[in-house]
Length: 331
Image 1 (cartoon, rainbow, N blue to C red):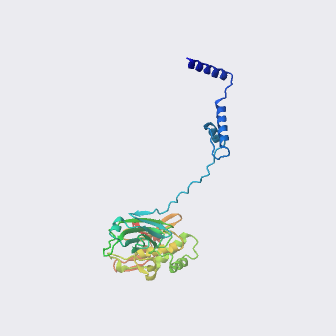
Image 2: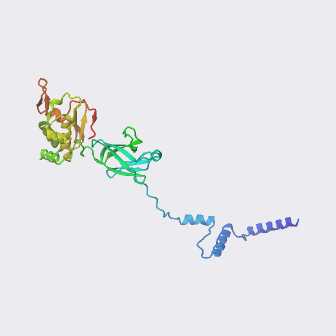
């Protein structure tokens, strides 16, 4: 009974003092708590702050984020391709192959790797055997050109085993675009050859526009190159590069087209080599548009009675061809 009376008395005193504002508020009690704790800690670096005070500090004095974001990894123009335990990439004009033997290769003690590299623009197929060094591969292959398609087949190498480029661990394909393919040289269109560069500038000397330059090149090729009538009905006709055409002067349609393309590119005019219906010709970019040019048909015709080529310049083929386009050569 005494405990109940004491409880009622305490409650009476509490409510009486509260009504007279004689008790400290909750905020005052928090401040007093922080002050006491601070005095206890002295000069220590550790600070204890009440949630209410922490909210005030955060609102009044926002903390600046001094951490710098981590640099994002720069995406390569040619993403690395993975062939099982090997990685293939292109960098600075080189094909880079790295990696270690596959579990199969480790078990059967492979000697290294064999690479079958095909560069369409260079018209090359290269086979390279690379031995392991300290159980790994790090090999760089210099590419001929920075444009065009590059295909690599990769297999592990074993002594006494017959190599087959069609049976491999895997392959990687890269479409290189480090430049304008219609202005750059290739294996078939040697627009950087000094002889052809000199000829191109001599032909276009005094011409002020690309149309005038292109017409001069078309006319020179049509009038100075002859068609090889002996190969008219050949089942497997040869392809002639620009330089071969200039040197021999007697070729088939591919020679006309490649030489014309090389001379155009040598003076900075974009040119493609097209094909269709067993024929080749050019497309030249003039005034922002691609225009067909057929120097073979512009050069003359085959006499049906004698089966001999007859030189007869046809300027109309400066802006047309009689054939339907099926595709574009990779050079």
